[in-house]
Length: 288
Image (cartoon, rainbow, N blue to C red; front, side, top):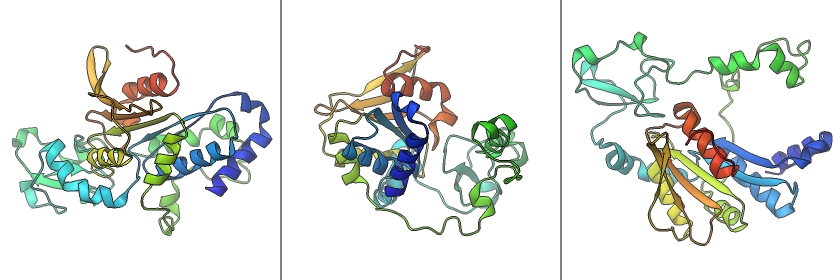
């Protein structure tokens, strides 16, 4: 937390004219830990004063709760009771754990990123592995961060760094050998919400990794009283999710995004944009 906050302060020292702009912190998955800690430090210190709020999608807040909620989540939200982590010939169907609704391929056809359920489809309905779209690819990100205009905007010295941009985990063998922070972020989130910071928590309910049921239980453990029934979120007349608000803490909103996976902006880009625009930035959205 101290390093991240120091980096933020250093940024504003170099670009003080940006202090007039409202600062929002956003991120997904494990970023929840960094962002919640950083937001808490900003509120405690009071700098920058332009801090406007935080949005976290499918955040990794409580490992133990995620593990305990995993099987109930599969049953309650997807009616899945029989599954395995191994392919059983033609008798099973692979489900990508980051989006159970997405029929796609990962880096290898036998990836640990799959669950396998009994196959119930007709042969004519089953796509061959090589015909399926990629589940999630870093190729678009690699191409974007390797563009000359982007490198220039990021002040990357291409003479000192001639290689194109790549995912760290793919080039550094010990990338994942790091020490994790607190396993349970409950105290941090409770402090953050009580500080009146605007907090938007949104979850794609097709993600089995940081599953929605664990998030639902996590929010209940904050012990903030829920305001009545859920609000249905609509776009172009269709429901794309639901939201819970809280009686004494209107600055907190907990959102379920239907049929979206681990990365809501990837699976439901227009809904995610509408959500961030209206509920975090307090601006009117183009989509109704």
